[in-house]
Structures are given as structure tokens and as C-alpha cells.
Length: 102
Image 1 (tube, rainbow, N blue to C red):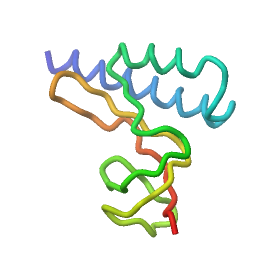
Image 2 (cartoon, helix red, strand yellow):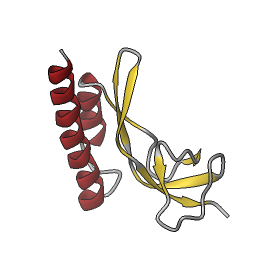
Image 3 (cartoon, rainbow, N blue to C red):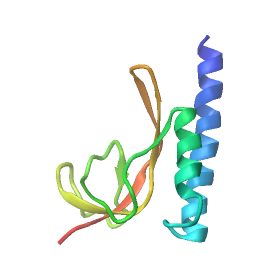
Image 4 (cartoon, rainbow, N blue to C red):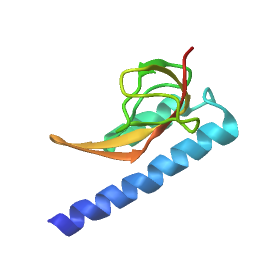
């Protein structure tokens, strides 16, 4: 059972990296993005927040390359992050890239 779940997590990580690549290559509002995200949700893959959203920084879900943000700070999403949900288990697949809102 654990081996199967690890396979699912690893597969979800690959899909999440692909989704981030799509956003980076085509921009965050490319045609068909909503459909792609709906398909990912069927696999348990959920976007942490949408591009441009302002959210509270959590080091668990976000990465600030400038190292200025601390937990609870208001940040703007620059590149999406994704997590995988299966029942009450949640795994960060890749962190959202953010910048501190000044």
C-alpha cells in the first residue's frame, strides 16, 4: 500500500512540474488552463493559489527567493505551487514562488 501511494505522489510531482512549466512557457492565462487544472484535480492535485493572488506566506507552501518573507507576511504569487490531497493526507508537490508585498 505504501509503495503504491509513493508511486502516486511521485506521479503527481511530475504532473505538477509540468503544470508549472506550462505557466512559465505560456503565461498564467493560457487557453485551456482551467481544463488542465480540472484534470489535475481528478488526480488529487490542487493549485496552492492563482498567479497574481495575494496570500499569507507559509514556509510550508511558499518559497521566496529573495528570503524577505516570513510566516504570516502578505505575498504575491509569481509562479504556482501545487499540493496533492488524498483523504486527510496532504503533500506539497512544489512550493509556490512568491514575492513580498510592500
